Amino acid sequence: MDNIAIVVADLDAAIAFFAELGLEFEDRARIEGAWADRTVGLDGVRSEIAMMRTPDGRSRLELTQYHHPAASAPEPAIPPSNTLGLHRLMFAVDDLDDTVARLRPHGAEVLDEIVDYEDVYRLCYLRGPGGIIVALAEQVG
Image (cartoon, rainbow, N blue to C red; front, side, top):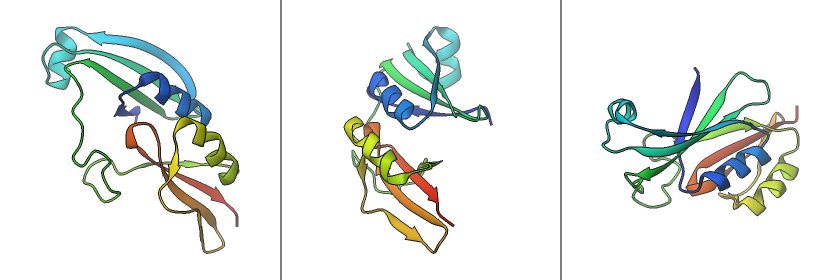
């Protein structure tokens, strides 16, 4: 897999959020033209993307902000965890409490609470930029 793309409303905020989570900013580019229209099936595409790389260098996250046509919002605006389609992104972290504390200034909100899964993981789901669900897992056993 080369990357996973997520459409965001505020590219700068999304970059800051995922950088705080440990992803490394790779590049930023404007995307437009007939080739972009044909690739994504929209007319008059003008967008901007930012590529974020995982610390191990194996995976990338493409953050995309559409300037034209305007991005459409899901219904409901903040879909529940069981909505069809992209469910969540999960990241392994060394210190779950520290990671959540660092992400809160970037708008992160834990969906319910941090839980222990047997004696193996501490886990939580949180909402990131634009309602994206991000799961965090700290291995404890």
